Length: 89
Picture (spheres, rainbow, N blue to C red):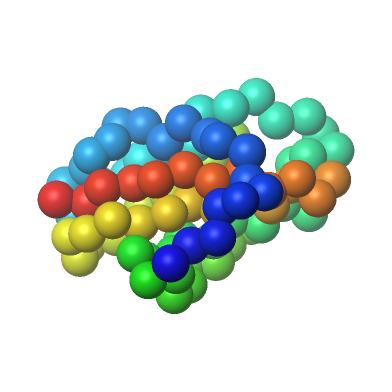
């Protein structure tokens, strides 16, 4: 399971998506938050299936082809952790 006790919520849209379709994390990020930001995609049991540093904003998450529930965890450059849920059909 994914520990979200200290995570702030984020909006992931569109949601749900069809396998392979991109989705976006829609939030305004400050320059300080963007600098050093890390995005992790986790499956329903908490295994990391992708990690990347976003190059553009809003943050695009794509390439998930297996249906299921995923969590998008964003760690900002200032250390805040954000978590959103994604359903892939």
